[in-house]
Image 1: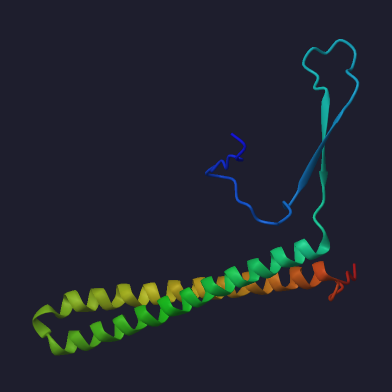
Image 2: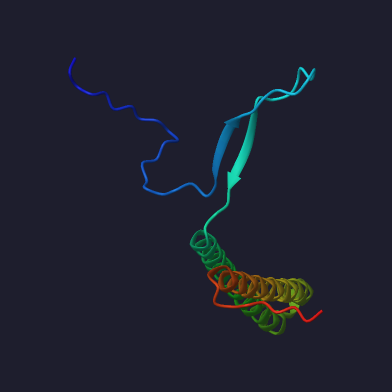
Length: 143
């Protein structure tokens, strides 16, 4: 057959991207009597500054998305807590149940707000790292 066969593999993607790290193997001489010594050494080529910048920008975007999810969770849980507070007054026969659900929802709202706050700081850290990787920001140490 003169046709070329096209093999379809599960894990082979045909993108024109460079790998994040390139590993180069070189053959070396064996040492004395060590039977377990490897004949190859591994050299890792560092990422370029633009690759690091892109990595940190992607990380910043990731934390921004999670921050927004935390904010939405806080709003939703806060709204549910207010609804349960209203139900406590509206349905006095089941007031205790509504009061407990209100307190749980309030605790979830506080936790979700704390998560959003945490992700906000992670996003700021990623932004600062991206600026340092691109050379826009110089970090000065006083001591």
